[in-house]
Image (cartoon, rainbow, N blue to C red; front, side):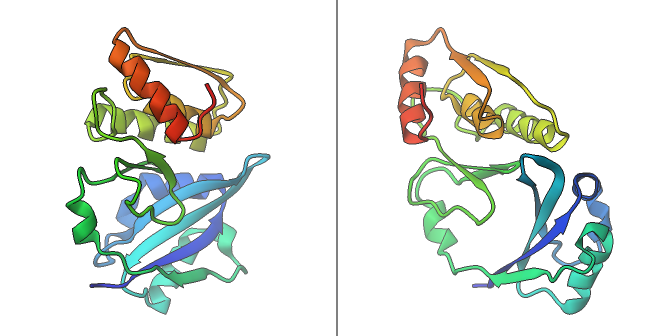
Amino acid sequence: MTQSWKLTLPCTRAEAEALSEDMSLLADLTPPPVLMTSEMEEDNPEKWQVDAYFEGKPAKATIALLQGMLPGSAGVKPVLEKLPDEDWVTLSQQGLAPIVAGRFHVRNLAQDAVPPGLVPMLIPAGRAFGTGQHDTTAGCLMMLDRCRMLGERFNNVADIGTGTGLLAFAALHLWPRAFATASDIDPDAVEVSAENAAINHVTT
């Protein structure tokens, strides 16, 4: 099993946005790392970081390449850590595979491992639509993540046809002071979303 590594570098919001939009900058790396960008402090919208996940330990030249793309990391020692081994084959056989959409890691089994730096969402597969497996739900998660990255702020959020409640939960994570309304005409979905709210520690 190839050992995974994570490289963390500070950056500005603009740098994080530019790197996310143009992955061709890393096209020469084989295989290219998986990048995750996140806001470090809600009160400081310009303070961001990039987490780069590698298959195998990245070379010093690779680290220098990434630092060169992020002027905000100048003079800061990069944080490089080896991630624990996981038996992903076994995990993938335990129901549907987890998905990553934006900063969100959506899984349907509590024992599924969550990579460092991602926001865990536990949505058991069941009677309601919206476990994150469908492109429409994943796309909405990515859109919400993008809005947060761009500094958007919302006081009220409506998740109409909520299904599992996943999108409402994600919005409340991004904007914890917002008031979220999640509704559905399907009684099963209403029941399931309430159960999922409790699982994900969302106050209803």
